[in-house]
Image (tube, rainbow, N blue to C red):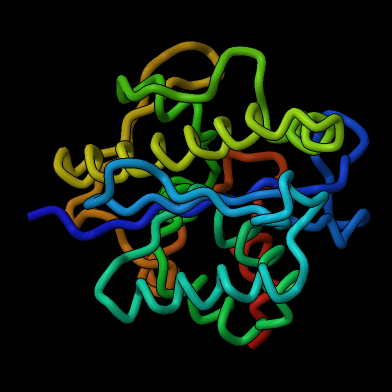
Length: 236
């Protein structure tokens, strides 16, 4: 039986210059909106600031961010398994900063399934969500849209475009998690357009368990990434 996954994703509020999304020098980025999607729900739950004021606010304030953390913690306590794509290195790091609940976010981050991190621990390189979606036959991101564009659109008041985008991201994440767990394999399209896959004999592992996997051979890479790239913000 499939696990009770809860997909989670955020969109940031501040624009980051450049195309490589080197975001850390520009933090705090703030959170414009977020989405959660439980496998037993009909539609994603969307989160943004200014609820009840007529229009979303520029970003979630500290209390609003803390409510999102508390919701995630409650869902985990109720038996749900949070699943993200790069949530370890990004979403939970940002959420910890915005909510002020660093300890709680660190706990959530290591107990969750971060599919990208799991694949990285096995292969030694990350895979993009959209490439995984296309390789697995799952609906991915809307054409021409990306997380880099979301802050500018939000600032221009195109709230629904961004909310639809983050909502689609959690739909994709949830479907990909469930499908790959059933198939015991994640499939993706490489940058060259060829197909590749990663075996998942035990299904998806939590971040804590993925960190226990043996390190892959990366001697063929010029500049291999280390696991600390994803985990440094967790501290000791």
